[in-house]
Image 1 (cartoon, helix red, strand yellow):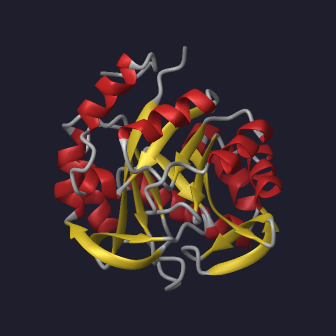
Image 2 (cartoon, rainbow, N blue to C red):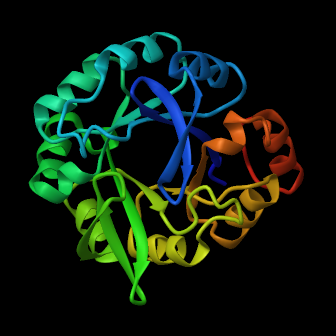
Length: 252
């Protein structure tokens, strides 16, 4: 049985970790370096670092902050935000990332995933897809959920995996920060379409939401969350004990 992963997410804006609801109304949480230190030592399996306004502001990711985070993290680190070229991949990997998450950059240049997978290996390339329901369709959004691309989400994710993405992060804008559970319908559609690891993001509010996720969708490899971990609403060690007691295989 595959070990399920629990992954905190650091959404970074202007050098601080922030959190909102449905990708809007962002509020300040903490220093990314301090939070990264905390998560590295409290049982998290991996850590995700998103520079959430890099693409919208058409600038490079803040590698100075990333380097400080990487120095304090001893678990795998996935980094995204403003990744548009192979040079961007090189820069964040050099700064300490283990995996690189690409979103808007792949929409602008779909060949970027293929090129990065050929150069760095598909295990290094993560497609992060921001998906929202529009007129009954799963639609892909870009620039931090600000712009509707008009593309159908499942077909887009499948194309990215065919191009070489070794992992998929599915960010449900509809459930982001709402804390009523993961977007099971969307995640099921993604799991049915691809064979690479799928990470569920958006909607976790309590430990039971993770149990429901892994029981209903055994193909999902990991659950990602932000505010419930940042604000101490769910303790990662306690969450893993609860999951283990429920018969779900986790690293305790």
